[in-house]
Image 1 (cartoon, rainbow, N blue to C red):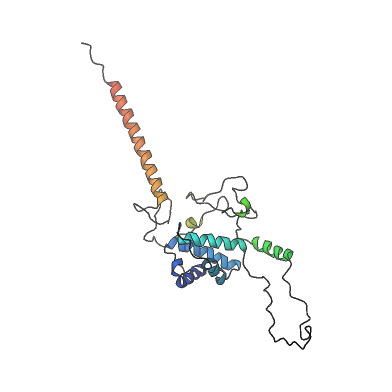
Image 2: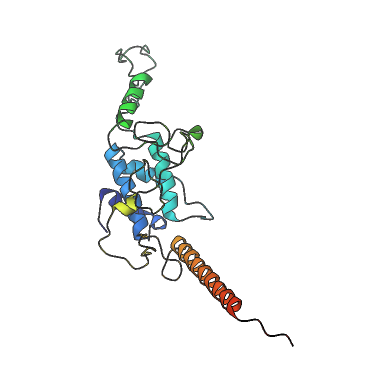
Length: 253
């Protein structure tokens, strides 16, 4: 496991709260890559920690811990980092004397105010337009789970087209057509125990569920097996029919 900055943040959180430990290597790599990108965008490790630990894990847990982490990191990305936000001024400490006028001893300077919303909005737009950074899709009233196309506010599905898939043919969704998904783009150093090797010449990396394959690759294998059996049965029936038609008819009594 490469100790990227994002992986180190997630492992530090798991050391503090063991129930947030990701035990699957591929899932840890994926979520660590997301956390590393968030650190590059300006998020701090404290923001990521608060987004995860401020609420307990759902009970009952209907998905994996990595799935819960993915959803909360996506929510935090939609809000944006707190870098550059003007902090609230601290209240001045001091004792109050009833015999002294209320205006005496006060700082008569201008009251600090947050930056104008227009300036903040322009700063956010400039950050969102950065190269290599994807924004969440603004379609479906802001609840679309896909990423927007580069230079757009909507994903391919919300723009009226079909969502593009990985150019390697694994079936995973990507942001733009012709792109390669994260799993296919990364060449693993070695196959790990518990990772699906893939089927039909396509690399997978998901958790093994049965017969040495993940659920999706197992379904593909069973479908190909059923198709081969059906083809063999059709060829057998055709051969039997041809043999029967070639036999001479019995002579009448």
